[in-house]
Length: 334
Image (tube, rainbow, N blue to C red; front, side, top):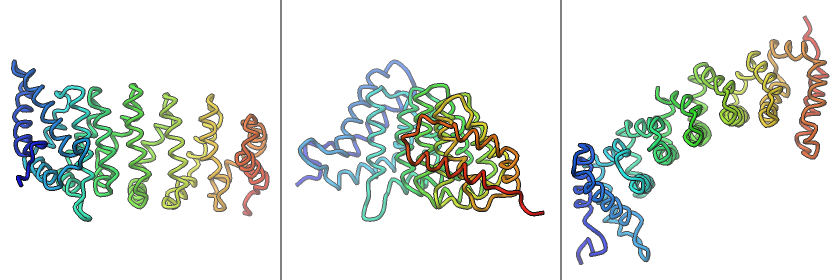
């Protein structure tokens, strides 16, 4: 029985045709319309091999050959590098093909993850995609699939390019900024041990950059960043980070300012970070000093803080606990 039945084209032929037509698209000459059609056909054929026809699973050996052809030809890199030249449906197909082949496993191995690890510029091309509106969201979908895999997340987290996220999450285009934040959050919450290592090694640089997000003029950026900060410092893997963060008076002052933000939602997220400073049994002298200086004002402020949430028992209990903690504070013995 032949390996490639009539329902599946030969992967080598598909890859060859796609590579040739992508080269024509890159030149941007008179032949591009025909080449664009051929690219669409090849991507459809490729997707069919990977996802199977409606009534049957794709043969494993055909998928394996397609994957190998994609690696050997360098086409995977070319498709991402020239994504903006492919039509709308084609861009969708590329992201589906990429994500499907990335998930592919042979036993415990993930060959495409190994391939991308050996060609890390693929990750940085996807990240840089946030700068090109016509491909940003497709690149985001592929990058998020990559960072599900710890070896790939590690490459991005410990790269110089990781800091570009601080620019992308504050972009003026709402859907691109939101997508970049979704990837940023995935990176910082999925692989806990890895992230704790990153934050411990790069504490000052990370939180200097992060503070700019907390002071952003953009409401969504500010709120999402504040919420994520709460998640990061309350995660048990980040205990050392939390201890360092809540020992610094400038961080407490920032949260006290955010408690008075004009947005109730930002006040509420700030409250969840502020409570960590107050509830800590090992407050630094500088933190105790600020809380004591503001003791009467803080007690009054918290007593009247978001009273419309009276039905939220947990919030009310936490608020009462903080008021008691602040009221019971004493100056340390000389």
